[in-house]
Image (cartoon, rainbow, N blue to C red):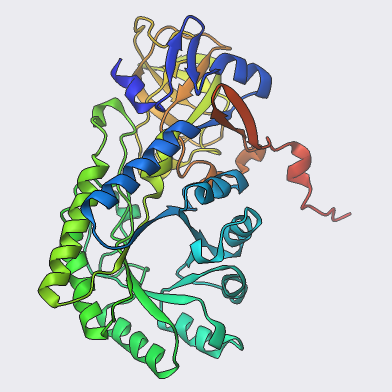
Length: 430
């Protein structure tokens, strides 16, 4: 079944229905309730191994992998990054606090952000090994901070003026983007770093997320290497060409984009570009957030209502927009399987939607499924990235419980929110 390949590596169809990581999904839903998010350890481990082995094969100098915290970050995920020697990319003091509490090593913590507050920068000073400087105002703040002589390493975020083929909301490297600095401001920043003896160690750029063709990265790498030559980096410096490599969310998007092809392209472009410019090979630091974690995650919902409206059959679930806003934001097409009858005969086209008071609260339009009834469970694959990290309490929704699945065991890594949690920050007026 083609749709199964969207699910984690350990997904199996048993006589009870779907299982992941050796755990029966129906039993998990009975024990922990729905909506429920599942993360498969084996899929995460395999994705990391793929990146590490491909970098080792194609890039002869030092290299590393950074997990993008914005994809999904909690204590358990941050601890998992350290088990594999990954860096953690954090934006703001909240993510930094999670990483620090999880024991992320200082040298493995890199801080991003386009408008870092003074609190963000102070947290970065205490916990991070690298700060990615987005703009001249931020650099001025760093220079004026009392402990500027103890700064973490600095990378400058370059805006190459290029795009990748993806949704307009996830393009980040084009001219006019809110992210990074153009060539002139990068050179001004480098001169300020020299003048104030700041530890400038590298360049970073990011063209966008959820793309499949690495070709636009070639000119981006070329422009970044031109800048590196002008700045005059020595033998020890770092280049991070970001991440953003895509994943398939729907069977119509299969096969999965080839991460090995992506890594090989970047490695060869950096090697050849440095040779042409007589530059030392940098440490190559990749940021494959989504393509590490997205397919490891699955969301499980329970069917509440089925109704016909015009020519469409709506299967209404107990979750949607509040835990996964990606369809509303980007028009993402999701797929799904019926947990108890994943390989059952199709019973026609249905559309999956949630309980919230928005017409955009939709997960899938016109998806073929076996006959489902109220009370049945639906599993939505590729739910590991940019769901829970973008979730909300819209309509008073309580965020789902999250389980870590490994070797037939399920472990809670985030508790389900309760109405009491929603009230904890509130104070009565009367």
